[in-house]
Image 1 (tube, rainbow, N blue to C red):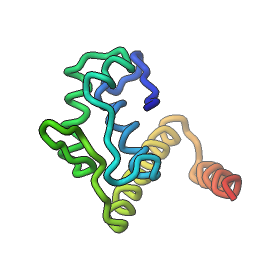
Image 2 (image 1 turned 180 degrees about the vertical axis):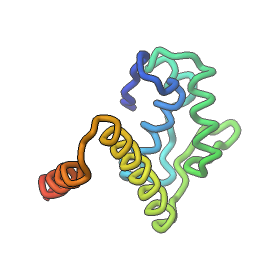
Image 3 (image 1 turned 45 degrees about the horizontal axis):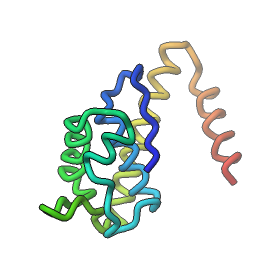
Length: 125
């Protein structure tokens, strides 16, 4: 499993792992019932501490995205489409809030920010 890790990023490494796996689940790259790599295996592949991957997996369990089965591993939980939509909207709201903060601090007008969003939406078609 490829999860991009940036040691110089402000987000902790366990959070980067969590976000990478969450994105894979929400996009369907990881299917319901699919096993995640073992904690030790992922730690070795990413060259991070086992404690770091354990924390990321614990966060995913707390988010109800995966189930940990003692002695068997960690598996992607089947997701309710309404819940997936709700989570996606939360992520969108967070990203838009961040974009607005950056625009305000740089003196960028609402019209220009809106125009840039429209361009990206039209570019995805």
